[in-house]
Amino acid sequence: MHHFRYSGETLHCENVDLAAVAQLYGTPTYVYSTATLVENIDRLRRGFGNLDVQVCYAAKANSSLAILRQFANLGAGFDLVSGGELRRVLAAGGSIKRSVFAGVGKTEAEIRLALEKGIYAFHVESEPELARINHIAGLVGQRAPISIRINPDVDALTHAKVNTGKSDSKFGIPLKHALLAYEACARFKNVRIRGVQMHIGSQLTEIGPFQEAARKLAALAAELKAVHNIEYISVGGGLGIVYKDALASGSPDWWAAQPAERRPLTPEAYGEALAPILAPLGLEVMIEPGRFLTGNAGVLLSRVEYLKRGSGKNFLIIDAAMNDLVRPAMYDSYHEIVPLRRDTTRRALVADVVGPVCESGDCFAHDRQMQEVGEGEHVALMSAGAYGFSMASRYNSRPLAAEVLVNGSGFELINARETFEQSIAGERIPKFLQ
Ligand SMILES: *Cc1c(COP(=O)(O)O)cnc(C)c1O
Image (cartoon, rainbow, N blue to C red; front, side, top):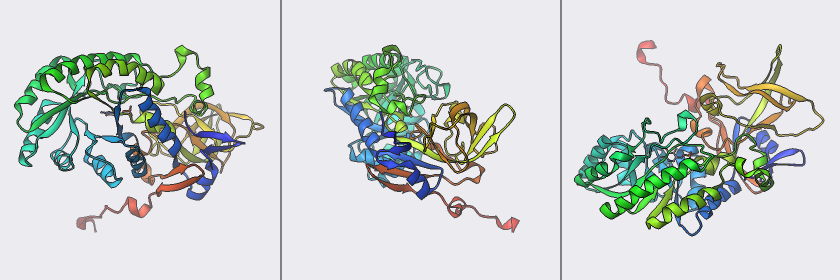
């Protein structure tokens, strides 16, 4: 559920008319809903009932400082995958002591920084990484807290590019080698075993793979608790969101109307299924949600530049492009596209919704049926709060978009649109070309 809906004929985020945001800050602009962020984390926590879960928000989903601050204020730690993300969390006032450091390619500088700032644990993905962490911890005179990322060999049944828990993925250490890997840890003098972790993939909409993987990891965790005295188990992130009926899914009525077998996984069902597997372990439980927390809490506002009528095909050309929101081009993903001003008297339009970038992949939707909209009007791409701005680039020398956070009836710019001067600030013409 979320807080984007039509009030009268205009699309609102909470109590803010999104047309006012587009008018004030221009487009393309990302807009996020505070109430949705808060509700999402509350629902996820409450889903586990009496079991207390530590939420480490996966910063890569949306690492804008204001978003990080919101989650820090709500007591979350962070799942970090780079030194840059770690520094963002610090800049936002978040706690590194509650945060974990994941990723297959941690550099020496990143390991040093994380140790210096008191990281809760490194989520280790390979033996050479373990050796490196051990070495650096020795140099700085610390014992590095570590957990091993286990690959449980479970198919997350999601898009190949975000399916990470199969045995052929680059992530983690196979379950069958786990005990040996932990024994190897015990031989490294400068590391301290703290827990065990997995993350099987992203945008999962069924409980089956989560349950299967959690059962496998829980069995291992029980052994690790007995042998190595671990403190926590992390089951990763991956809980999916609704993309197809994104706008309607803001309302509880939509959820109530879905037949049980077609109802997408809810945070309540997720917690209810996992809590009985995890609670008996008597360990701290960590989750690392990214997309679920921010995905449906954000939209991308864009202006219609042209409606180009072709032979047999219409193109709605908007001012947002694949550099702003790469998910459709990268994962063939679906984003619902709705007009900021609804007008039921208009004709329907079937069009490809495309951006101005010079690539045929710069297409947000194929043969999409929608209300006819014309030049100068605005649309919102729904469910754009996760893996939207955080994956943006400057391709085609387009500046990074602006970001706005809504809170009730108010809204504030949280990231100004990049200027041309900022975008070329680090560039130089070398002497030999002058
Ligand atoms: C990306 C990632 C997550 C978050 O995934 P979502 O699908 O956004 O919930 C959590 N943990 C790790 C290790 C990740 O790489």
